[in-house]
Image (cartoon, rainbow, N blue to C red; front, side, top):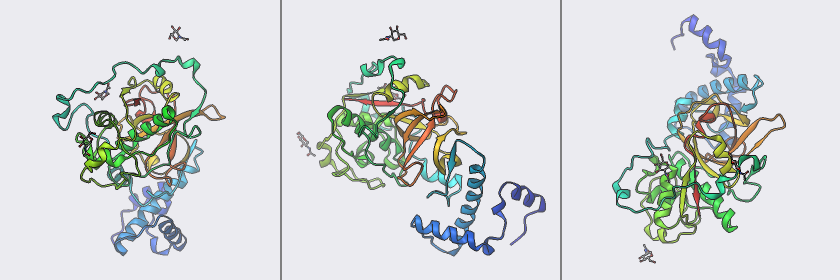
Length: 347
Ligand SMILES: *[C@@H]1O[C@H](CO)[C@@H](O)[C@H](O)[C@H]1NC(C)=O
Ligand SMILES: *[C@@H]1O[C@H](CO)[C@@H](O)[C@H](O)[C@H]1NC(C)=O
Ligand SMILES: *[C@@H]1O[C@H](CO)[C@@H](O)[C@H](O)[C@H]1NC(C)=O
């Protein structure tokens, strides 16, 4: 193997000590990687691939340790994405949001008379001074367990479904896990695992007069043929949905006090990939690329305001599947663009 030039070596070793070439002579690190593989049920196709993943893991671990020693308000960990470079992570996990929510893939809606509510739902109009200081819809029994989208770009379905599950519990007192797969397979506007939008999911449920349960139409994480017989089951239906005023965390707060809200964020950064816990404060961009659900908000003892964000990467990521994201970060879009594309269903 050719040695890299000395200058490059110095630069590399300055920022990532563990990236040195001593892979084979690092039994403790090797052991740690083996344990990590066991914990996450990882198996690689061959020795070469395993070695390559070990190198990536070590580099990530060095960055994680450096970050965690820096006294930030949140921490990173070698979670299940720790053997992926950030580029690989982005390619694998962020295909879920389409390019343009206004561009219909099919002309279906041109002739379809959907009655979309044009006014804010009444509940959203309360003055923010009257809002509770913190709201956690999980504690109020309006949030089902954290799900896992796998490597299907279906975040848009998970985001919309969590908002509908929440509203159904709030309105009807029943917490029922609903079907993302029905949206992936049957929503003709979206392209299933290749992406969609939360607004499209809501419009599908409105036009279909409902969505069935997770139990009846379980998640597969691949594009499948629409099981048309299930379309009639309609466990939960909605009468409309509302877009929250763009770039207004104040409006988002009013809605989040009333029900879970679908939002989109930039989840593409290394820090998001390996987030462990605490109030995430970026840096991140306002290039939104991932649908998630706000299931509450609050404030720490140190007066750090946050959103409680439900993700769909399984309970092994973040704080048991959730992230606390800094609220009122001082940018119009909200941190990571959280106030840019928020919407919520109406029953
Ligand atoms: C919500 O916003 C999306 C994206 O701009 C748009 O396509 C959709 O028609 C809007 N829906 C409503 C109900 O206003
Ligand atoms: C809500 O705020 C508006 C001004 O933003 C004010 O005119 C109105 O009286 C307030 N309503 C209540 C119920 O406090
Ligand atoms: C769905 O229900 C409607 C009316 O209740 C019925 O006409 C239709 O055949 C049903 N479709 C399927 C696929 O079961």
